[in-house]
Structure formats: structure tokens, C-alpha cells
Image (cartoon, helix red, strand yellow):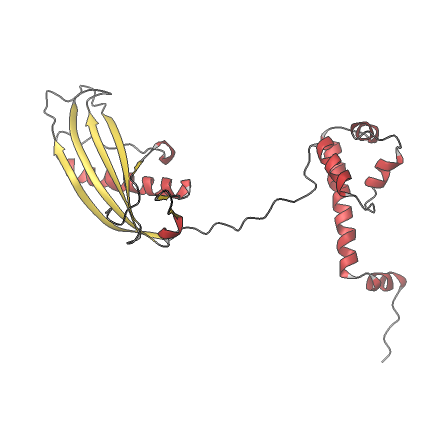
Length: 241
């Protein structure tokens, strides 16, 4: 059985190497980006011509043809004129892997009820003074978050109760975030916020159980954005627990 002859278009496509096709695609994409940027600025060819300091209008037509082989200098000039990114020279960063951790222990460090019926606010509008402390034990791969919650009758008012807990986290590869010169851990902000959120949420539940049935039964710790919680961080130490 004879193979049907190829038409001219197929022969041309077959003759184009993958490298040449990539070059053609890149030129067309650059032309499209320039055209889109001009459209966003509501520019015509003459406006771009003026912005890059050229005299010959045919230059712009060449740039927009999709076949022009741009120089690096021309692309930089176009980026400045159009305020658009045409070159990608930034080093590509590896995607940061999520930190593996687990909550390995919970303890009540201190708890007390100081309120009486006479000291309770009439409108039961409690105020909470929240302090977080982070302790590190790099050798054991532990981060301990210690929330201390003071329950006040009002902001700056009499203290009605206190609850202090300890949330212990086992963090894989914690040593990789240790700066040995400063003896400090450099952990991503989002991870710190996650630990703070989990710790305050866990403490909220323990507080409710502890004060349940007392006159502070309704003193429920509100939900707080973790970005607003600024912990005190102790220096990393093999002795910290």
C-alpha cells in the first residue's frame, strides 16, 4: 500500500526543528505581550515609538510582527517604556516544602480563679490579656508554646482569673532552621502563626473546661487572628523544654 504524498504544508512543518519552533513561539509571545501592554496603556504605534526614542515607524511594525529577533537592550527599553515584564531573569526559587510537625503534649502549667460575684463586671464583658512564649529544644526537635491568659474585669481592671498552658510540638528537621552563630531559629512566619493559632485554640478549650460551672463560666477566650499574636521567643537551647 502506497503512502499518500505529503502536501507542502506538512513538508514545511516537518522541516522545522523543535529548537526553531521554540524560537518562533518566543518571538510571537513577545510580540503579543508588547501589543497587550500597548492596549492597556491605550497606545498606538506612534506613542511607543516616542517612548523608546525611535524615529522610523517601521520599527514598531517589525516588533509586533512576531518574527523579530529582539536584542536584550531593546527588550529592557520596552520593559521600561511599557512597564511590563518581558524578561524572566530572576533566579527560580525552589518551592518551600511544608514543615512536618505534630502536637505531642499538652499541659496545664497554672490555673486559678480569683473572681467573686462582687468583682464580676455587670455586663459580663470580659477582657483577656494574652501572652505567648516560645521555647525551643533543637536537639529534641521540640517547640513549646506557652500561652498565659489573664481574665480581667475590663481593660487594665481587676484580674478575675489566670490560665497558663503548655503546648509541645515535635518538629521534623528543626535543626535546619537554626542559625548557629546567633543561636536563633529562623522559621517561616506562616508556621509560627499556625503554632500560635493551634495553641490558643487548644488553650481556649482547656480554659472552658476548667472554669465551667464557676462564675467565669462565660469567660470564653475569643477567636484571635494569629497575625496579632506576637510571641516572646527564648533563645534555642538543648536545655529548653
